[in-house]
Amino acid sequence: DAGVIQSPRHEVTEMGQEVTLRCKPISGHNSLFWYRQTMMRGLELLIYFNNNVPIDDSGMPEDRFSAKMPNASFSTLKIQPSEPRDSAVYFCASRPPQDPEQYFGPGTRLTVT
Amino acid sequence: AQSVTQLDSQVPVFEEAPVELRCNYSSSVSVYLFWYVQYPNQGLQLLLKYLSGSTLVKGINGFEAEFNKSQTSFHLRKPSVHISDTAEYFCAVNFNKFYFGSGTKLNVKP
View (cartoon, rainbow over the protein chains, first blue to last red):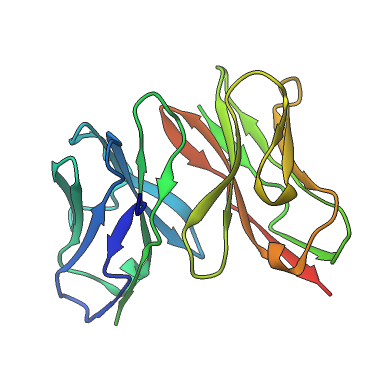
């Protein structure tokens, strides 16, 4: 299996622009997680889905952030409008049924100038 | 509530020396415990996990961890480290969702 796939790997954008991060989970996994990693705050869970349904979005920082999972093989995390403080590495992870282990993607490094 | 504490933010050690990275958690219920490793500019990779059974868990790259319920700890150990072990290590607890520690940066010196 190719593992969790994230795109793009790097994104540089200007403040105020819309940013969309993409994730393809491992086939057969039914849970998907979005994390943000920064030096100041470490790894933070933003939102997670189970069977394509958002279960807990309490970590989403504000209304500028939104996430969707239209089907079992694709999810997006959108930031609109983006701000410099959104600069971070964003990870997607997926998890198979009946297994607590999460499998992480390589991350998207976002820089907002 | 669940939480994870990694007591050391950085651990310097010489090559071939033993190392222990400490992790304590707080939980009122049974949990699953994990250690992940993150190499520079990469994602997180599972080192080992404790779900049940033997309290001594062996993982990849010669690492092992021991689950101690009475001390609510899950310390990671390696008897002899390599330069290639230089990375950041995260302890995590799973109860419905993951709670990560703040990470420990292991710096192996020649």
